[in-house]
Image 1 (cartoon, rainbow, N blue to C red):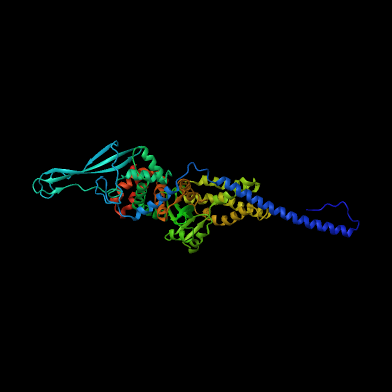
Image 2: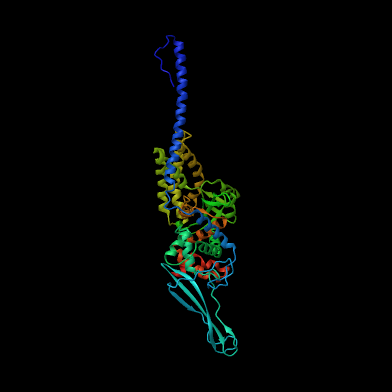
Length: 512
């Protein structure tokens, strides 16, 4: 501490030496105080961010073992062979295989009789009934369960004794019990309404239907495998656009043997040309990976050429260096950093930056829905001067503040990213931000609060397929459950070369 002395020497030289020493100590203290101020500012900024972004208290304690088994069984369902049909309860079921419980008697039955006709296809003689095979299919009609009974009479020719019977129609899971509506209901519940399968099992039990979580997991895995070609068709559609939006988010994945989770990633790539009045339908596809290495997006986008809206993630740099993909930065990320500083510190400079950015977004509202040419012309006339002024103004503010402050970091980030945002001024088919991809990640952010983690890489892949289908349907204003019900009923017999006919916008057109 500085020492106060009431006994001052009369010698001027000694006094000057004392003053110099005190000034030196004062300078050291000022430096220490300034360092502490920077540290306090940084900690306050971090605390404000944590308070704003932290997850709320969980509404229920989830059973970790249930969730682990759920994800593992979904992944295993893709690899394991189809189980034999054990819809009857006969005693000759192979040992070790689960025996299906009979469907509840109280559920209404809808009988569908598939008759081979009255004449023998072999000789033309009349047919007589010998018996019939009854296959029960558990279906879900929104709000209630029903049992569809597919009845196939076995007929015998009265002349040549030939046996005739109609073949079984194709079903989503061969020799399985669920109908397409029930499978669609389970998928939408899990990946759109964020209900883990064990919780769905409890809900079904209240309706008097005993469906174990492991059974539902098997259905989800097999459904995802069946629908994978459709997800690949959506991916091809997204990558055929001239500009895409890209983002990723962390998800926890169980680490076998370690008893804990590690951080994996879900990637979203979206195409949405509605802001410039294009007739191409919007779509988004998702990919799962164990890590966030730059090789992941490089693999996902190996066949893509065009513009990409993204944040400043360095893993994309290899794509930009290839020359196939050109970068468009995101104004929303720039704005977010100033918002964080303003909320934590009340900075007037941050507030002014937010107002200037708001003016740019006001012009974007004006150009929305216009042709690319008109959008580019209006941006050159109105947005370019504002962006130039913002960049110049930020450059003049930076020397006035401490280089270690959070505000200085926000300004440096903005000055770096604005240079890579400028292509949107010249190209009307580009956007000012990457919010399209950010919105595509909302379903994952909400879901992981409920399912907490992926059980395996296979479970992550199934989730990516389901998100691709459900979120693309939502983007096109299509009810995902109605579309998936229709698609699952048709896809088994549909030619793979005509898979595009099952895309959600085709379903919407045919429904209309």
